[in-house]
Each structure stands twice: as structure tokens, then as C-alpha cells.
Amino acid sequence: MFDRIDSRSPIPIYAQIAARVRVAVGAGELKAGDGLPSVRALASRLRVNPATVVQAYRELEAEGLVQMRQGAGTYVTDVTPERRARERAADARRLVRDLLAEAARRGITAADLKHALNDELEETTR
Figure 1 (cartoon, one colour):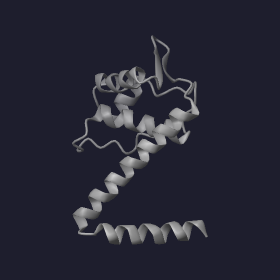
Figure 2: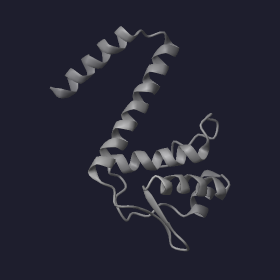
Figure 3: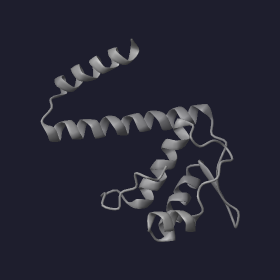
Figure 4: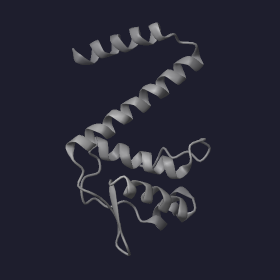
């Protein structure tokens, strides 16, 4: 789940960690009661300061996605289907923004992108 954390990204590490958890919750990879890696374990794995992981977990707790239990760990809360749908929609918007930015960088027009997307959607629905 945390394989895509990029220390060279302009996005702060804590925000990337929180974003990955949101995506996992939206996709159903994480369900109510699932535990997140301990602060120390994740900090060690990502080679970041434990305070960075705590900051991500606190942000998620403030949003109601996880509950931090002193001495016991951090667990996904009971997320409603509507909340999962909102997280998936937000993830879809991020994907589209990334695609549009990459297309612009490569000089691909919006019309070319729409055509390619429609072709791919038709292929996948056959």
C-alpha cells in the first residue's frame, strides 16, 4: 500500500501516506477494524521520522477514517458506503488530473486524449 511513497515528490510524505490510506479505504482494500502499520514500523520502512507517520494518522483520524488507540495501534473506522464512494470519486479526480498534466507535458491535446479514452472504454466494455 505504501510502495508509491516518493521522498522526491513535492507532496509532503505525511500527505502521501494519508492519501494512500484514503485510496485503500475507497477501494475496499482496508475495511473497518483493519489495523494500519505501527508508527515505528512504517517510519522505519519508509525511512522517515515517526512524527511524519503520526501526522498522517492524525490527519486521517481528524477525518474520521481511522482511530488511534493509545498503545494499541491505529485502526480503520466503520466507513459508510457513501464515504467509500466519495473516496473513490476523489481518487478518480486525482487520476484524471495526473493524466491531464502528463498529457499536457507530452503535448497531447484534449481531443486526442478524449478519443483515446473513448477507444479504451469501448475496448474494455466489449
